[in-house]
Image (cartoon, rainbow, N blue to C red; front, side, top):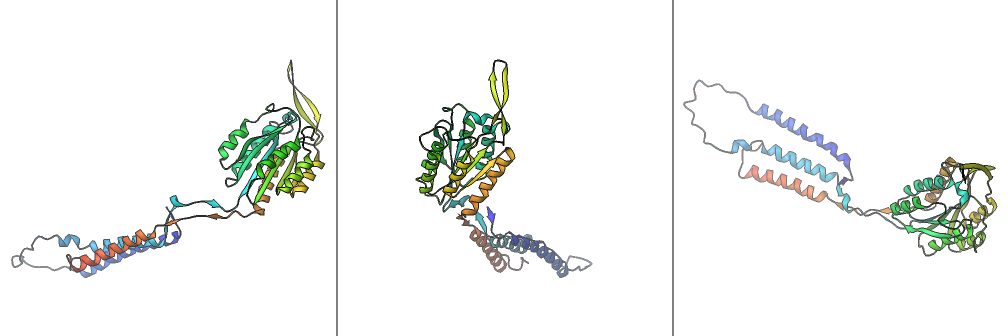
Length: 328
């Protein structure tokens, strides 16, 4: 249970004030009388009425307490329904080619991208999010879903070697757009991460970008990799050996993809900049669409108001019938 106007609870301070006033008045009304003998007085008949002489203040205090609760407007939280009129559908298209094992990110590009993307997913509980992975070809690892626990588990499962090696950026983007084309969301977004240049696949990246534009899909492209050379692990009979390899990101194509679809191109050179990019995308999408939440609440003030009225009515009846003269 929650309260719409909890400030009314300050009125509870009136109850001890009322009780204190009642005690003070009682002491003022009753005095002392000294007599030499009590033989002339008849013994009073046994009665329950004296025991109820303070029932009036008790009933009035209970009525006041119930009235204060009613004024605070209790509402049943169990009946709240959270709905969004129009949300955002997001597909994350992630490159899992062999070059994503380079360790200019920690522990490597692939795992760094996974961890930071999972944090992004956790911060958007109201959006449907899906996952597409690509290398030499592409496929959907997880369709659009609001069940982010399932999505995160599937994201954690991706690894290098799941599909043929290579970099099919166009295929990855086309698969992502295919997942969004039937969406009725007001905003449809693809976040495409890659560390290379398109060298495989039957769909050129810019053709996939045109398809995305036709379906009103906005694409944020992220080039992931440091500038210059990056350490890459090579397995050898003597263990893993590292060799610096050139970082070759086709920034021109990635920029054109973003511009064609109304998105933006980002360059991530380490874990911190990649995290910052996801935060920027998060803010950009929240600025483009206001997701309105409507909540249906059940008002619970009426029972408390009835209880307050019942206590007052009970006190009035007792005062004027059974315990007339006994209540104060």
